[in-house]
Image: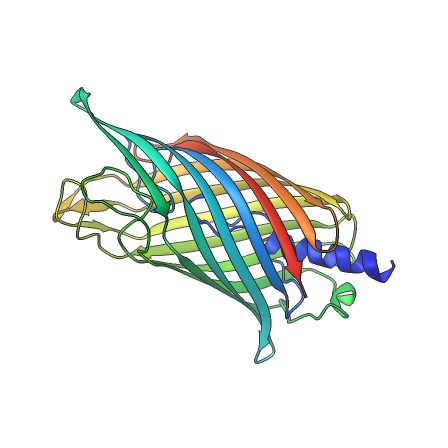
Length: 313
């Protein structure tokens, strides 16, 4: 394999790793494979989301019907720290939201809202713990993937647009912290194998701060939310790969002004992703997903995501 094609394959993996970090719908396929270190990745993607959960909030409102259009800017830097692979990612979404909230015992009494501007800022940290070494572009093609383990921490800041008089907002008005394990099984001679197959798992738990200016309440508290994200991906050639994606969520029961809402979430979302690599610097991904199984308090809805990624060594 010549060097330009080798670089193109390596950067394809780097782009797929750094393309999404939105906790509600998952990080996306191949988000746990280590790209070369000392790489800058700039990502811009548009999303359309509909359902019963405010964007990246962890909260589900069964009687909420919303539509969200988002444009998300993201920057990732990979590096070696104490001979460990480390990446740092900053994410800033912006967009607009429209929603209708119907009271269960009075369907004619509805609360219609609109919100536009910035959503909550995120910082994401990942690190290799086992078989996720800090690979350079030069030795990338010699590394044979197998079982690998990493760690993840995502901090979400309450920086988005928020109005306590509205039933839905782009911002969540509280902090959250997600901690997870990055588990990857790779099948191929190297990351550059044109027939590479990967199986990824991300079990995680998210802890939430309190919202002290909640809609129709003084304070909303939420128990931790457990998630298991999984992907099966396969290369068809150096410029094309496909993935089947899933996210299972459980927990997240809330209390309103000290009173339990008895609303433990349970949902299963499935998606498919098509990845294209046009050059060693430019890639594109298209994903579609929806909820296929849930309880009465679980996440419901669908999303479409188009991702444009530019990488710089």
